[in-house]
Image (cartoon, rainbow, N blue to C red; front, side):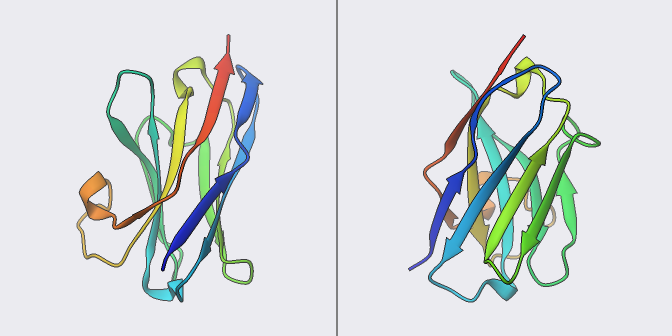
Length: 125
């Protein structure tokens, strides 16, 4: 059974940085795409970034391009989201997700089969 456990969230001032981690277990993930999504209060859960585990191809939402970087460690079975130049509008619960489905963009909730429990990121102004 796939398990995804996020960590690294917290409170940070605008302009600061945080690194989120997603520890994955229960499968060999070489054929998976891993994603990060976020959900702000009263809003839908939105795509942030995705990475293919095997070759490391990265995809980003326009709102985070140039500020966030997704990466993975095959040795640690962990996916990271480095978030720089954080803004108050980045405040949300951040979720890690995994899928083996084929997709054109891997940017929709339905593209993913497995989800973590989420970690809160709060950016103060």
